[in-house]
Image 1 (cartoon, chains in turn brown, blue):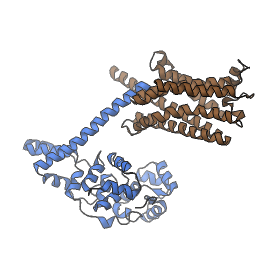
Image 2 (cartoon, each protein chain N blue to C red; image 1 turned 120 degrees about the vertical axis):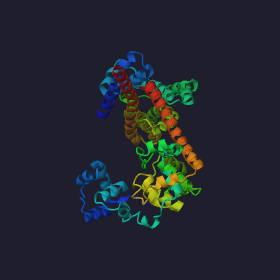
Image 3 (cartoon, each protein chain N blue to C red; image 1 turned 60 degrees about the vertical axis):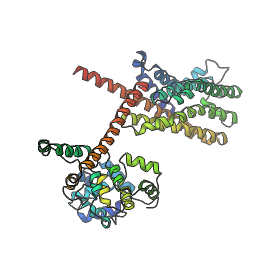
Length: 238
Length: 250
């Protein structure tokens, strides 16, 4: 519970840190991505989940589907920028080109269809109160395929940055790579959850840590740019 | 060396030696004395294995010969058995671009030689390419592959470690064993020992480079220039990539 709050707060803080430059029009994609992911994690914080859920009582747990759509959108935007940053045009095509859009739509549509087929009364994010139902476990696992798909495409490019001579690139690349690896492992745990629900809780912990690592990687690049800009201003002033 | 063998120095053995040598064995006083971070030393004590540089620093602190001290610990017991003078190729492997250019310019004009001689300082290893240059100098043909087999690493990882100047002391010793040369020069190339501690004759580099023919000297300058050019290109590419990453994600 505390972890959910903590992750949501950290992601929101990192998104807000980008607000001034985002409003000035700089890197709107990354800002929108940070905002979408922070909202997705914020939405599954219990009181917010309850309040939003009470808006449409006839469709229990609809905030979870919204959270997943926000998360997928945020990841799509972030992954597109990461592919650009690391000069990976082929990966970019499979992320935000036609094939990428097809995967995005297909994964979300399948998840939405499963969501519509599941009958659950309890209002719990990821429908986790009903993990005894195979369809619920499938719903949760399908949601982990999209991040894993994106990160498998990006990992080789980002990992190459770990050997850079530039410290900020090394730090950014290590954090992103670690987050990507954890998200891929999370997908593996998701597959295991299909067989045994006990794998669900460790899987969720992996998701949270992966999100924080990726956000920290993006934040490193953000603060490195701020620091470089500030240095350049100081040099001009001197 | 078979895979899985512990290749750093045992803390228990080191503490015994340190007690005999009159050194403190607590992490805090020892770290202050030899100038390393206390947390680093404490972590190594906890693991039960010490990095070789700690042993060398401690030996220097009590004015002991680091090679003799290192040879008292497993797996460096045969370190003194392989001691031999460095070959001219090994000596030249530790000559930098600046050293070679200074020699070239000095040979071209006596006035330049007189001007450069008082200001020129030989750059001691570790240099940016000191390990790779040493490996290239002693490689009998298949050193990288053989080293990979002996230390249980993928050949590509060994090549990457050599290029990045990051072979560990036991790997340098193993490379020297394969090449049939003195391990001490390898350890000096890696920065663990000074050239003096590695039993290099005084002025070895000056004597060896002075003996080079003008053609060989040009080849040496060219080789060092190529390495320097590669490093400069990589740096420029990395700076551009850093800027692109910061601009795209920042």
